[in-house]
Image 1 (spheres, rainbow, N blue to C red):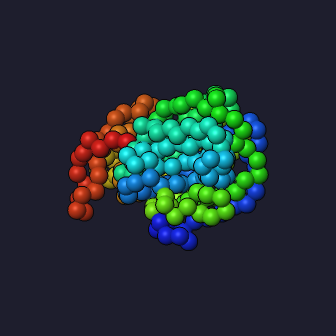
Image 2 (image 1 turned 90 degrees about the horizontal axis):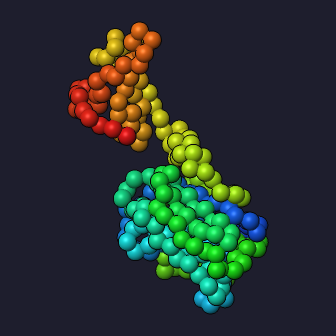
Image 3 (image 1 turned 90 degrees about the vertical axis):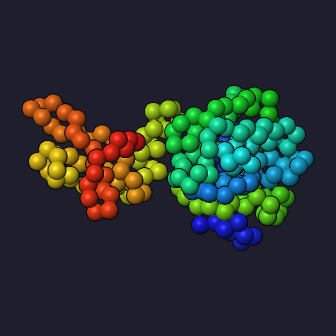
Length: 230
């Protein structure tokens, strides 16, 4: 939890992400408004600071910052990230190409960073804030939850992002339930994630083929039919 206070951030020294393309990721939960920093690397002094950032903009969407100290790109994606749902955020930075934003493996668009110079070097990484010179900025400190921060070389494919979205964002958050009212109570398995049924159309095995069964959710202690889908 990050409460937006001056001491609510994490710092890792000397992060070197090389001179090639790279990917940055984080899992977040947020319900607030306003511009806030999620993960940043480097010094955001203006002018002169070199930094990259994963942020939330004033409209509540995922924003990427890429600044060489003279030229900068602040790209606001179409991904809303302050709606109170867990988001698995991915930012890919293709050197000499484009910066792309994803939330839960869904693309929020891209923007060119081809004209921006070197932003690399053994800089410090910050979670929940950004640095201006040698001090954390108190203006845009994160006020939600952040976890699972990753920084890696290379650009992940769409299929890789989908796989990671399932395995990473919802790790240890799945439970199973066998519905006793469908298929003899032995074949229908429902998945519970963060209090919501996410396998919207369960299936039972019927003479060697998967046949669609009736979906159910728990409502006041009674299993009722619903059209709930993922």
